[in-house]
Amino acid sequence: MGQTTAKEILGQKIGMSRVFTEAGEAVPVTVIEAGPCPVIAVKTIARHGYDGYQVGFGVRHKNRVTKPLAGQFAGAKVEPTQYLREIRCDIGELKIGSVLKVGMFKVGERIDVTGVSRGLGFAGSMKRHHFSGGQKTHGQSDRMRAPGSIGQSSYPSRVFKGMRMAGRMGNRKVTTLNLEIVDIIENENLMLVKGAVPGFRGKLVKIRSTNRG
Image 1 (tube, rainbow, N blue to C red):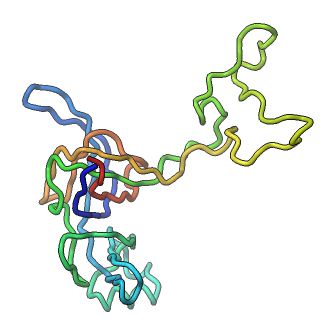
Image 2 (image 1 turned 90 degrees about the vertical axis):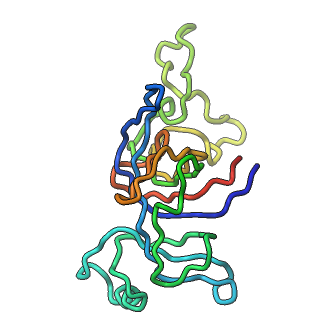
């Protein structure tokens, strides 16, 4: 697998659209508003044990910021942001107050996108785990959407942890790997990514350069 320079940025999912190639082929894309992300704090190996950056994204009204956070933003000389996250970025030495923008990525580059998947509430085992169901014959008329046996009665006389059963579906941290950047519109901070990414429209996503060849 090929190694790439580590680059990360925060953004929000705007929605899905499509673009057309020169041959007239329709390509489904997800539109992401990526950045700008000001650097709020710098993490170093000497002080924190690792290298990284704390960056912000979005806009938050000053009245909705706690005093400790307000002091942190004021020290960095940055307007309060809606989100604060830590990222790894190897594009040169960044200082507090530096701004990460979508232009750090290039068209055709491969990325991984992390977000929180849509919460679908309680779901049965067939929908949640893609079970095929039981037989439709031999007295099984009421077991077509049942998960089947989940344990034994004599031993161990209990259900093992992690058994795939009905339960809450979605609302989990998900990473979609190795997506292609179709287009970048720098003046609007937009990135068009081929395919779908996790989450609802308007939700926070993290974009990073992939390490998959």
